[in-house]
Amino acid sequence: MKIYFAGSIRGGRKDAELYRKVIAALKEKHQVLTEHVGDLSLSTVEDKGDKAIYEQDTAWLRECDVVVAECTQVSLGVGYELAYAEAHNKEVHIFYRPNETQLSAMLSGNEYFKIHRYNSEDELLELVKKCGDDFHGYEKG
Image: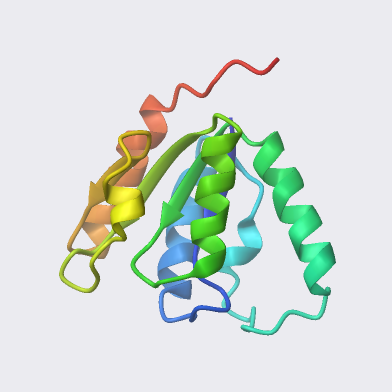
């Protein structure tokens, strides 16, 4: 399966190391289209240009089978990606730490999204691997 991993970039890179570990766990069984999100050297100011980033990311969103998002760090871009994924009928799994943030009602109130709360890195990695075994994706067509 092709996975689109979403995590904060311009909204803050506090969880970049965590993203890297989640991406590594997903890569054990799946292709991750957005490995760069876990790149520790990626800054909040990319040099590709906003239009190129938008075009590449939306192309990957259309191509992927499943979206996995870590939403503890608030990010307008991740919110947009989640809405885009829903509009394109992609399976979406959202992970977040409830002791550090309150998930937007636009996400938690939407039954379309599969919401996963976790408290530790180990718990997150276990959840991601379990979900990864159960991804079913949607038929392309």
